[in-house]
Image 1 (cartoon, rainbow, N blue to C red):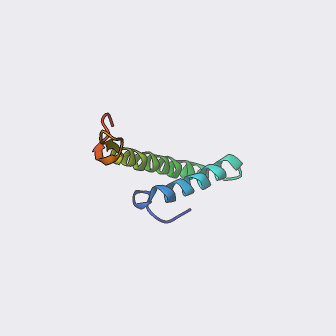
Image 2: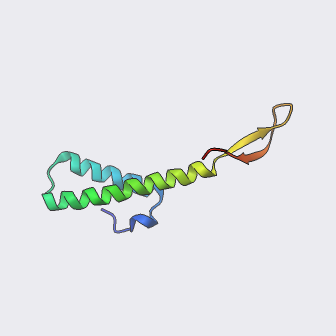
Image 3: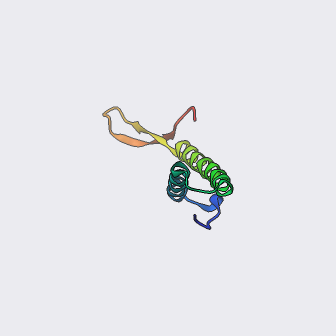
Length: 80
């Protein structure tokens, strides 16, 4: 597993490592103590991915159109 702290990972890094953790746990050939450590790391990685997705959703903007249907700007998406 990566030595990078979860809090410093990009979404892509966290997702890639989470996939590795899940793969190791699914195979079931990891000792109990290591499984616990992997599970804890996986939970942190999952939360990091969820947080990064939420941040991205909050930045999404709706495109505003003029009377002819041409894009003229953006406005924040409401309800996020």
